[in-house]
Structures are given as C-alpha cells and as structure tokens.
Length: 268
Image (cartoon, rainbow, N blue to C red):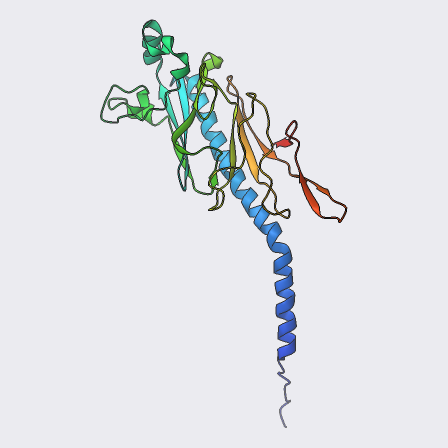
C-alpha cells in the first residue's frame, strides 16, 4: 500500500514578515509599561532596605546596645552607600558630663560624619574603635545600592542621628535642615540611577516636613519614579511614593502637572 503523502508546507516569506511585524508592534507597545514597572520595582526594593537599616539602628537604642546612633549616607558615582554607627551609653555619659566637650558646646556637631580610624580607640563612634567588641560592632550594618541614588552627592555627604525615646535627634550636612542647630530633615529621597540622572531631580523643601515637586520627566510619556524613606525623632519609619499627575491640552497631548504647594505622595 502506498504511504500517505504528508503536506509539510511551512510559512512563506509574507507570513513570516507579518508575524515579525505583529511581535514588534506588541513589544513596542508593552515595553514602556514594562520599563516603568521594572524601575519602580528596583526603587521599592531599595527603599525597603534603607527603611530596614534605619529601623534597625533605632532599635539598637531601645535595646540598650547604643545610647546614640547614626545613619550615614554616601552617594558616589555609581553606588548609594548607607551605614549605621553607634555610641555606647558609657561614652555618651562621659561626653555629657564634660562641660567643655563639643557635645555640650556645639550641639549641631553631635551627628559627626568624620571617618573613623579602625586602628585607633580615639574615635567619636564606638563602633569605629579598635578595641570595641565584635558583639557591639556586629550591631551595625552597611548596604550598597547600585540601582538607585538620592538628591545629594559625595562621600559621607549626610547623616541623621537618633537616641532612645527621642532624647537626641540631629542631622548633618545635606540632611541638616538647620545647620546651626542640627535640626534634621525627616526623610530621604530615593530614585532610579542612570547615566543621565546621577542624582534625583528634586531639591529639599523650605520646611522640615515640607514637599517639593520633582523635575518634570524628559518625555511626557515617562513618569517620575521617586520614593522616600521618612523618619521622626521617636523612631517611626515609613515609606512613600510620588504620584505622577498629568492633564491634557487642547490637542489631547499629556501635560505633566505638579503643585509645589501640595505634591502628592502615597504612603505604603
């Protein structure tokens, strides 16, 4: 019996061109949404890490590991580095009892950002001292984030410091709202890092807890991906995201809008 002849006809050139065109169209339509989602995902992950480090530093004061803690921020060309440092109760009491110590004469300098010397015991922060036990040193942490940045630049560029029950609460450098008193800002901005935007396009407001609009996106089809980690002197730490607002002009084109008096942030 003769075998059945199979028809193995494949795609012709025209069909292949049509399929490729459809796939290309779908990719072009979906890519902006995917890109926006991916940027937001990386920012959210980084914000969670920063918030966790701040919370952990504050918890160490509640546990009695430290009497005074610092969260220090460095923003280099390719990495946002956040580290915590601590001062024990014995060291703090010594400073407070010495009327000539800078702790008493210059309160704005309490949240000292100077680099420690790990081969010395004369550091401001006990966690930098050579003889400090590993148990104490292991209570502080450092994280390095490659995908995000903030709105200031430089090594050891800003810091915020906390004590148990809010007894002391100071900021330094970029996070000092009032450099003469050390009153700190209550948040830090976090946004996506790129070659075009090495720092976030937003300044600091004129009030400790004030708001500002971020810079408008380069293209109207884009959105500003900006989040914040908020804190206060009593150890509450929360996060928020900027809510993009758009309107339409007479031609139906998108117009980016933001009211500097009341930009919208959604708390997570």
